[in-house]
Image (cartoon, rainbow, N blue to C red; front, side, top):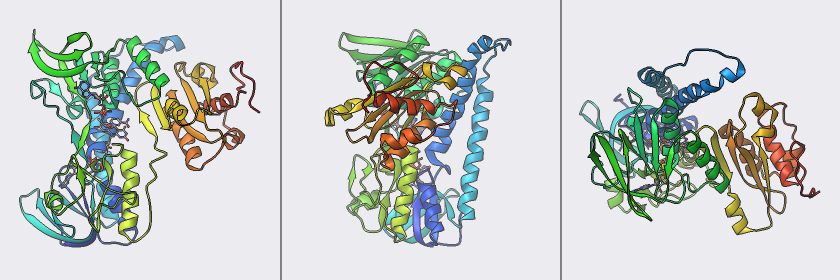
Length: 474
Ligand code: FAD
Ligand code: NAD
């Protein structure tokens, strides 16, 4: 939408989960705010990332759970998945959220420009609107929230038929018969889990020694086992170097310690990471904006080295997570509006929406031991949690890492609702609570949350619902 107003206190480039919260916060602080978006309100997360993937994962999880319903006395004919309807359901969820973003921006008085922004200087932006016309805007403060795009590795065959990225994987009209995932990171494991549940034969090819390699080692082992048990073939230490057509399928070839190995599938999903998208920022780069391989560098106040210019979210690329982009957005808006706010990157939850889910915060056990061997680790299995048994969710564990002063250093949950539960440990870390406060907080029964308290008891050597030979610490 073109608008009459062209002078702003704060102008935001990009309306993803970084950009739109920044605009709303600046408007709440009484500023004249504009936002420029070239493609879709809500950006990657709402249109082709977090939300669509979780909507389809929800469908896949329901479908997968059907298998165990007989065990609980629910008898029905084997259901079938209609992928086109599942995708339409996902599209409806996306539309509801993205139109909500538009309404929120308007309700807060933010002027929306539908078009591509070319930043001319820290105070001048030219927008090529979707109707082809241009509009020149002036601003006191600029917040860059241009986001990211998938990395397209320069393999032979990358542009071929049936080679897809996460965008296309979330809009398939039919369930693929087989799929080879290049990369075993977060996108690959989530989508592998989804397609496997729908009946696709899935193969993961990862160049590192493990999938989700930065996570807790026990969680990696447990997820690997769980996915393998369900039929997903996981190949690690295998660096993909080419894709070709062979025998009517796609063939992915990787270099391994034992030489070259090939993996065949109907489709190939490329999920080897994302890269910052500095589109429209050439003039700022020429003016000396500090950048590193497309990423814009920003300090803890989200300030770049150019006065009045802030950068947030995947464009900064510290974590590539929506909730970090949103927090950075609020920090940038506060600072752009004359307040003082700083990011703290120590306590960032890392959710992975496989089933079971994996969620972590803070240090892994290995990282904590490397820093200080004098730590206590408590672990509690879901098989000993009443609520988990009622839901037939026996797989996995909750683990908490406690420092020598009783502080929570990190946690990792592999199991039901892990991505929600991790917030309890995040809050404990953020508020610098010790085991005493966690343990003296009464957790409702029967709930999954009791497992977090039990894991903390286990770190103290005194769990109630599992037998632990070690003597209580206190
Ligand atoms: P984006 O969402 O990429 O938004 C940037 C916006 O800027 C885009 O809309 C773009 O069109 C616009 N833009 C760029 N340049 C210009 C220009 N010059 N002019 C005008 N507009 C411009 N994270 C999680 O935390 N949880 C998840 O479950 C999760 N799932 C994901 C699943 C997938 C498949 C993918 C791909 C990502 C997922 N992520 C998840 C990551 C998350 O989507 C990103 O971290 C988040 O979207 C970053 O937000 P952003 O606003 O920085 O960038
Ligand atoms: P990623 O960095 O998580 O994983 C990419 C993987 O590809 C790595 O393990 C890497 O070793 C591997 N790889 C790279 N080149 C390879 C090659 N030639 N052969 C074999 N393996 C290769 O990236 P992603 O999975 O693409 O996800 C991008 C970002 O999106 C992530 O960083 C993540 O933060 C975000 N995301 C988050 C969520 C969530 O929070 N639940 C979900 C999806 C995506």
